Image (tube, rainbow, N blue to C red; front, top):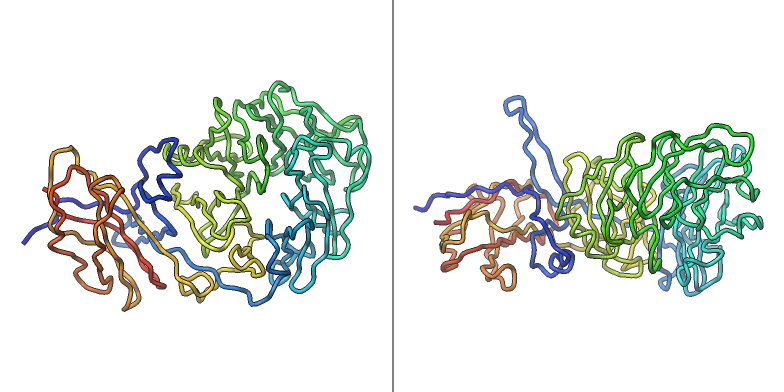
Length: 497
């Protein structure tokens, strides 16, 4: 009886990709881990962590109807009163109208076909929380105003910031808030601030200019008590020094960094692009550029003092080979991730990448639920009138519909001599008695795949024999789970010889 000669952990990182990484991945011609997450187990006997690839949890509708079927949800905001559930405000576009929707109630914030909801944030103004919504001009992002900004403490109370000193600016990127001030960047690399404890009042002389003015401005980011002024090639750090004139901000000495903010923040078409950074714990994560082409894209983390590139070469190729529409924070039942959105909000099927900082690994995402969320509710993209959440009694389906989980990889065979393989198996488990996976193979780098063979994960011996593959120089393996239950995949083994 054939014995395994190769044992491959299924949490291996991806190979280095190319400029075609995204197209090859979604076409099934590259390595991929689709709709997966990770599980770590550690016992008193085995102190080394055991990492398994498992099926991601699915999304459940909260049961309410939000707005109408003709709308496109761009963002899900938090109720400024401070609650997440069940009072989410959905920021949508319906034909020419940009609206805020709360269940059966909707209000039009701005009726203009050229704008769409791009950013939201809740900030305190004189003891009252307000939701601030920035509308982006997608037709001409260099226009004045490039953005229209509104705020409200109640759904029916949206007010536009129409101070002439504010509307005269050609805004760039997200507005950030600190110490009672609102800050925003303009097209001249200036960082403007509002009057103290006000969103509506601005003064034309209350600004500072970045020391780096040769690179196009992208926008602001904030972590703790530090504001980051970002261009395409440089980032500078600022803190509140309480200056009596001009801006209260001063540049932190020796804080110029040769890292740029990526194209998701600005550059080219802005249609459908939303947040360009997110915060998890004491870190912000953003798509940045080290230098070179405007399409260069890496995931970068910053903790207030140090920048670190955390994406791997494959991910750099992936992010650089497609348009990124947003960077969002999410969590799978206590497993936080950075959600990098690859498709515009108008697409019914959403694609993206989930990076889990705890294990420094990423997984591909595909589904009918957007990555845009308020920490609890996620927007629906096939059914645009629904909001979704992660139910603790989850059955691993999205709104009652199963989705595909795929683990696909190339066997590390060592050389290109011809080989054969007669058997394969998995080290895996499931709490269910009815979960199966199908395994198929490709000998031509993913162009064609063999007829899938079914494996029952509840069997004690998870082995398939008499594969009938013939001989090959390279072999790709695809493991597909189309069920609706929990599974854990740890290792693949076979007998190539």
